[in-house]
Image (cartoon, rainbow, N blue to C red; front, side, top):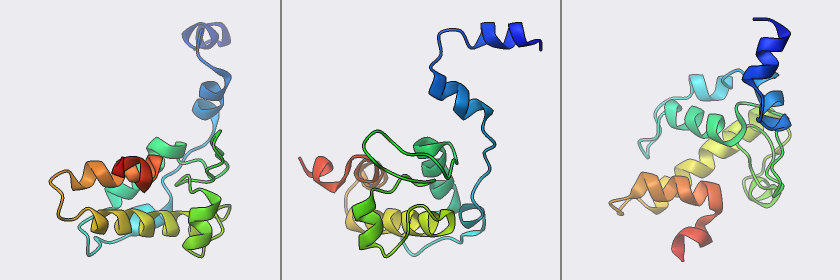
Length: 128
């Protein structure tokens, strides 16, 4: 593909989309090697969240201030005792947080949906 063809294919797409497409992305080792947890979440859940939240980018920062591969808010990272800028700690804390949310909603018929919504928007938003 020539540069002209590549630019034409990306016409109308945002600069952040281009940077994301050009950046090297790899599945975090913590996601791919994690075992099934007591809550039933699997490594694919971790990888799905990481892909959706940051595109597997350790340097990702959201407009709201979420940081890293699992897009942890600084307050959430502190609560979990993790440095959100350290990729390993970010993934471990994000996985732990997702497990906590799955446990919180374990008796709900929409457990996974609510846990993922709470991960993304915060538990308070889901309760409203």
